[in-house]
Image (cartoon, rainbow, N blue to C red; front, side, top):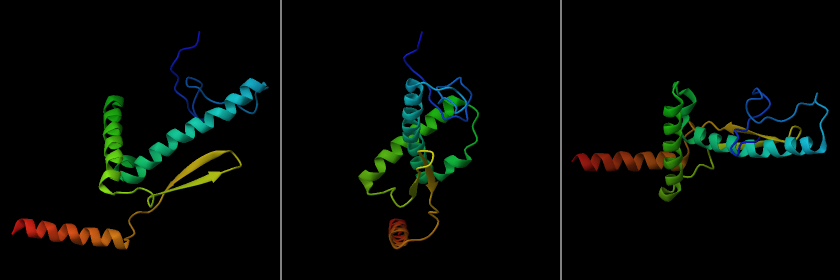
Length: 136
C-alpha cells in the first residue's frame, strides 16, 4: 500500500526515500518514466535551496543536529527571501544555474558575491550616511 506523501531524493541516497532506478536494473517503460520525472522534481528543490544558500551564505556552515531547529531556520529564510523583492533586493546576480544535459540534472553554483559592485558600494555609502545622520 502506497502512502500519499513521499520524500524524493537522488540516487546517492538509500531506497528509504523515493530514488530513481539504477542503470543496473532491468527497467520497464513505467520505471523509465519514474527515472525521467524524479530529477525534474529534485531540481526544483535543489534550485530552491541554491537560492537560499546564495542569499544566506551562513546556511552553508550551519551546525545543527535538531531537524526541528533546521526546519525553523529554513522557513524563516524563505520568509526573508520572499520579502526581499518587496524591498528591491534581487537575487539574480548571486546565482548561476548550469544545465548539464548529459545527465539531465541542473547544478547550482553560488557566485562569489564578495566582489563589490557599483550598486552595493552606493548602498553601503547611503546606509553609512543615514546611520551617521541618525546618531547626530
